[in-house]
Length: 177
Image 1 (cartoon, one colour):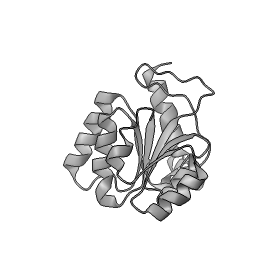
Image 2 (spheres, rainbow, N blue to C red; image 1 turned 45 degrees about the horizontal axis):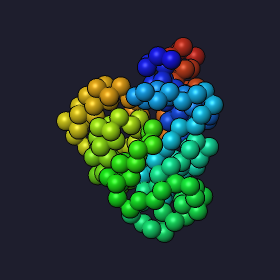
Image 3 (cartoon, rainbow, N blue to C red; image 1 turned 120 degrees about the horizontal axis):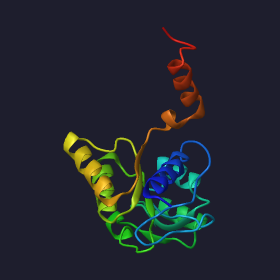
Image 4 (tube, rainbow, N blue to C red; image 1 turned 135 degrees about the vertical axis):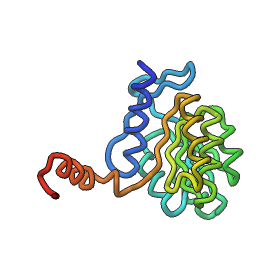
């Protein structure tokens, strides 16, 4: 399986957080999961938007849960009892069996958490805004390229099938000026 194929598969996987089905093929380092093997995912921020993100990837292998709110963390852990729990995202990313992380923390943690995950060679789905500065965006772009991992920023409306259909209609001139 080619590296580009695995990036495409992961992008389809994280796109499902806002839409439909997840793909389960991934190449990471020397680990090549089979077509029927699930991704090992860590969820960082499991309340609010993070709870929805976690529900969207629940059929994958949830191996780590992290939230500073122990009540929300406990609720997520009850749904995913095999997952290890953390209150510090830096510690959660040290877990060796992770393939990818879903980040839904307060906005000011998005870029630092994404950078840490990319440095570990993890694929990342992060809620918006991914960064607050152009420099943060450049660092993330460079790390993703160096590590050959996929990243995606969540913009739920842009992933909705109706929105995608609207773009298609505009591009083909069926509607609009």
